[in-house]
Image 1: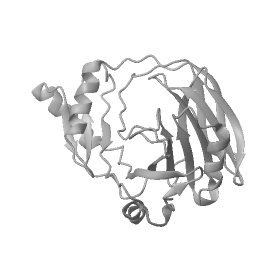
Image 2: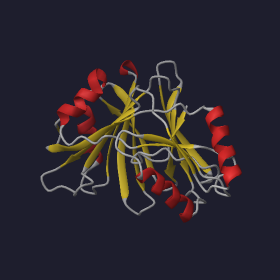
Image 3: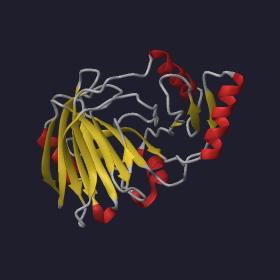
Length: 263
């Protein structure tokens, strides 16, 4: 099982009790066995509990890493009552498709241009960590308690298996460095399901794209911008395709066309 609260965050940041959700309605994509593999929980707005100081401490530690480096980070305190250790990774960004394709291999064919004339802007590969390392966690806890440290950080390497391929595309007019359209391809090897949250005012609809059942989600993000995305689980390829945008000019129909033409 994998739980995510956002698509655009390269860091995996898990502090105990950071958000409280009141579930309202659940939407699911299922495999051929009828098992839910993608779950979108429509919820009331999260109650943010992590302090600005805690977030800054984490970001400062993350910013000390170089591309291709990962770390385990423990920040003790009231924001982390369960003493959880977070993991973060700085991906290597590619500004052209050939080096990214070389890193991705046969997992996914990275398009240089997608439906609508949107051209490749940049992309990277994300890798998973071993999230169960009790000996390492105990050592980090002990160091924090013994030396009264506000943060304990250990550089660790992620697993070599691809977790997700993330790419950004830009139109002729463009939306600046943030791009117009993002595509995220998640590897389902070793995963049972992915669970995400959508706001109480979000639009969530089932759609049909390629030969698969998909899901369309339109919602307001915490920064006030609207995000529209299409999710499609390709069981025969053991992966999840997500195509999204924060460009208000792009429509649901256009996003579906982009997904339809992906290989």
